[in-house]
Picture 1 (tube, rainbow, N blue to C red):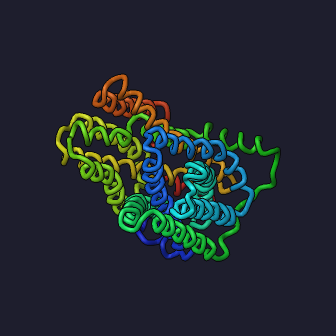
Picture 2 (picture 1 turned 45 degrees about the horizontal axis):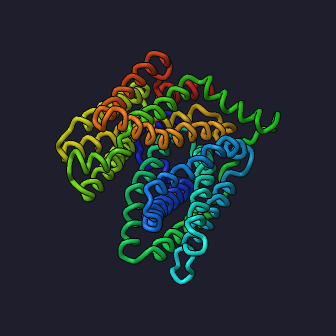
Picture 3 (picture 1 turned 90 degrees about the vertical axis):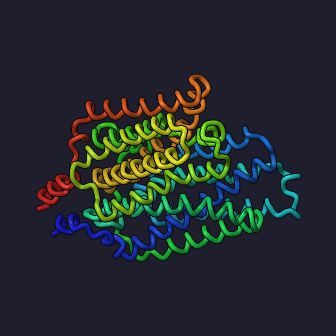
Length: 427
């Protein structure tokens, strides 16, 4: 019966669960607010300092606490009430947005008194929150969704994030541009407040499996790391994602392509930046009705390889429309790999370890974004712009070939067969 439900291609199966609807709405509102705030903070810092280095420091100030706290957060996510962790951590985001709103009131002259220090305090808080919420969200979703619906939930979760990735920056930029910075931060505050109300509205979630703690916190953290390192499917999926982002991403170089290669100006840059997210949303809709349950490992490898090929074509393109289309395709392929990876994480991780395994994954993903931007900049400086992106795409293809050879279990993975085996064992 469970397998029949899984393979029925009921796109809205998981959305019929009240707690899941509330949680995904919470994630959409919270993510939208976070990305709105990110856009406004970037504009504000540059307007105040006129210093490009200050913009670079924003990413560094956020990623350091995120990476440092992630493993510890994963430990506590596995032993504490996950809904409370999410609720109280989101309160920190509310606090951060209130700091920014007060700081930006012109009559208080906060910049003259404190410089940009309060802004970077908020960015640091956001990094801490990101390090806690990434494993908490993953673990809590696995707690409230029936096991046979986890791939469906992963697809809906990715759709919510991608739509927020488009709407958040757009709303933030429009409100800032037309209404001013204080109303923009006020709207962010309202969104975070709404997200707290939504997470508190989740009633009586299923009780999480909380094991008796054996050993100290560092022993349990090592257990989580070892679990990933000894599982060929998890390690292969995480490594594929990390290296694809590290070598294959051209997003950091888009301003240079828009200005010097395609010569389309800031309007064209906006379209180029939006193209991967649009492709990801289209793919999310497709996967909602056609989940990759058969030959899952093949789909994962093909998608990451196709992403690398898209980056090579983008580097060689001199046509704006071709470049935008290729970026759209890259976003769709990347989204399928994300959905498959999230499904793998949920299905192959026992509930009592979901926090720690998700924390390891968050370090793979979180660090690779910032390191990928750094790698792109260094490679472009050494090799030149176009050769550096071609190099990144080629390295992505090499990583895929290596994973296909070194991780045959991942290559042969079929989520359909996995569920069949799990149901047979349960019987």
